[in-house]
Image (tube, rainbow, N blue to C red; front, top):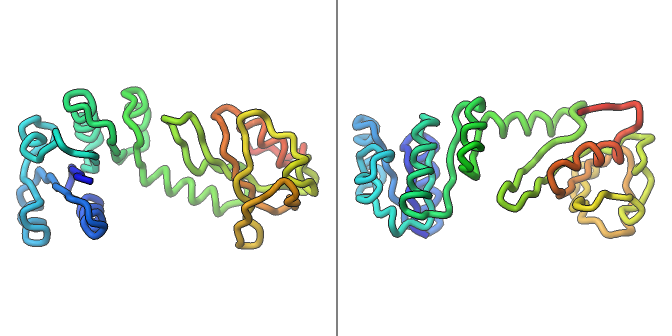
Length: 224
């Protein structure tokens, strides 16, 4: 692929290096001249000095032939503008944006910019994963496909504990895809038994979380 990365901070630099190591062609755009002078000796000709929110900078970088545009500057407003311009002006379909302040996620959603990566959100999900008291954990949201992947811990006394996967009456739009048990992952079949303490991963349509929670937690428990 040919990838344009906007933002030469630590994220942009490491991402550029990894993409190059995988054999992709990359152009990194950095607006700060001091930062550019640090990056240029490391990456040489692939670094462009300029503001990626400006059309001529993007065109100089070759956005019209870019397979993917990644906006990872430290400014959410810039990332929104870069994403919008890449999609609406140049018709780029594969766009990834970084959200620095989780409070701005709603603005990315409002403008239908996706996927959006927020380090704060990722860390919160990891915390939820490591703290059983959270119960249901949202692992991944596939907005374009209208799907999400969640994880829920099976409580003793829940409707699903002690049943096989095939015996669980999942709502339409929900599917068990994995079971985590004592540090090991299991790809289940219909005959796989679900025990209390298991962590069950499901893929489902949004809006089914309440129904799923009731299946895997005891009646007296409530996590949502």
